[in-house]
Image (cartoon, rainbow, N blue to C red; front, side):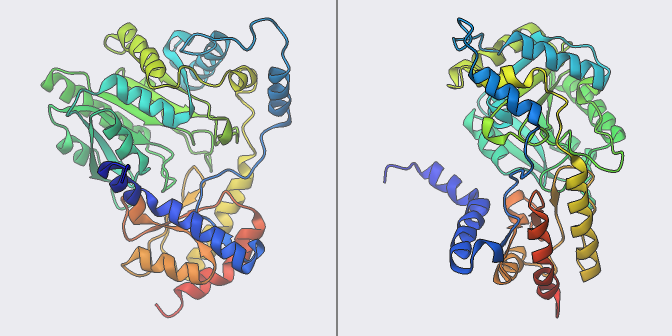
Amino acid sequence: MPVSAKIADFMERSSWIRKMFEEGARLKQQFGPQNVFDFSLGNPNLEPSVGLKKAISMAANDNTPGAHAYMPNAGLMQTRDAIAQKISRDEGIQIDGSTIIMTVGAGGGLNVALKTLLNPGDEVVIPKPFFVEYVFYCDNHGGSAVLVPTRPDFSLDVSEIEKAITPKTAAVLINSPNNPTGRIYTEEQVKALSDVLRSKSSEFGRAIVLISDEPYRGIIYDSAVVPSILKAYKNSMVVTSFSKDLSIPGERLGYIAMNPEMESAEKTAAGLVLANRILGFVNAPSLIQRAVANHLNDIVDVSIYKRRRDRLYNALTAFGYDVIKPEGAFYLFPKSPIEDDVAFVARLRDKLILTVPGVGFGGPGFFRIAYCVSDETIEGSMKGFEEAIKGI
């Protein structure tokens, strides 16, 4: 067949969310969409702000000569400057637009970062559970993912990361708030990790880069704080998108923010820009770049996600599920009441509830619930969640 053996293998390994999506489509056709309770996709269901929608329309209808022409591969300077000002203000570290590279979403940004950093055979240390695409992104650029466990509460186990670092380690990739657990890594954990990376960089004679994937940074609860990676460690990059907090996932806009004090900062920034071009992204979408520049603070109403989190968390714990209350993002990651998470997800499916087994995130024995869904979906699922755990 024309599909390579590697891609065929990757398709099988990455198929859990796709399988549940396809199963959901089948069940909705059979039983009616209102009777199927789909928690499988992390697809925000809140609308972007009115102001942002107007800005997108204005950008599309801009008749200024050259408004729709090519741009610098790093993106529009006005947007990059606006992002740099927001980061400087919010995180207490002074950066400017020259260290911002606009990307095609966070996925594009991670590929750009890894393309820039990895030599063939290099390794990227990743705590698990994790977003499964990370493994494929590493492979895209000749590297390999080294997966390490987190603690029982899904917080960073810095000692495990330290043990996994070798002379081949080019980067450590973390995700906070985390998908699928909703865990936010604390300032103390980030400091400890930074200390380890400084020590190991010195030991091995190479700058190990800390990459933080932060598309859920704006979706946090109960006065939680996401510590600044850029402030904690000089050889660091933040990769993020506007998909979740501005609720525009289909627009595919994100950015890389690089610490300006990174070793060989100017060369690294130039490498990121080149990677953006030669990977075929060329530059991030122009219309949405212009639109978001003045709407960076138009974050969706997080209290809606918090209400949904609390409703599900309180109900599930009352039913007998073991689940850690997430501090951010819009996922719950309960422990499966039976050892086989795939079997329990099938049990939920029989109740017309669609979730994703934890094995798909490197977290067997758990399952993921994406609660970026309507209140009606949550309320309709309650009976099924309660029935699924009875008798176990």
